[in-house]
Length: 257
Ligand code: SF4
Image (cartoon, rainbow, N blue to C red; front, side):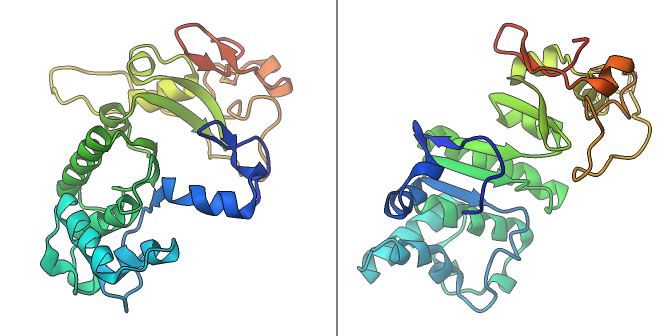
């Protein structure tokens, strides 16, 4: 685990940076990650069955037969087959590789999965299959995801609660329903205006943001969004807006929201 720069990471009521190495090791299987690029997250020389079962050995399981059984079962759950066990990563398509990535996370019986842009490297025709798999697993296994994505249509489809980030700061957070019905932050409004509407007779006014995204290492003063915000005024350059509760579990950081 990398060093934190700020804040706390609370998991099941425990601040994970306060845990001993041993307690953290015991907790780790409960928190898994699915990476953006399924290919680079797999070792090309290791058969996928072994790659999926690896973490079980790391966490003390010794019964090889049992591990193999669990891997076979997890492959099936993720839409692959037992005959894929002895194949190498290069023998799989992008969508299948992402299924392997999901199987590797799932075999640890996690409660929580960080899914870091899990479909953005995939062909559009495959994306829906992986989203549906994630959605089914979420329901069947009562999983919690932290789903990181630039695709707001996917976010709306999959997420209960959405946090919008700009230059590393959370600028708005609400339930998915509330956020898509009533976006309050100018950045969120601009993002929403870019979502295509699947009806050619309907038009939405697109908010096009001007200027380049500043460097997160050297962000603008005051509100970090002021260099691109269509509503910015003097106070925005000087004062960082507070993160305010607007009611209905809807939080926003903007002086004028
Ligand atoms: S605080 Fe000012 S610059 Fe920041 S989002 Fe609100 S209006 Fe725009």
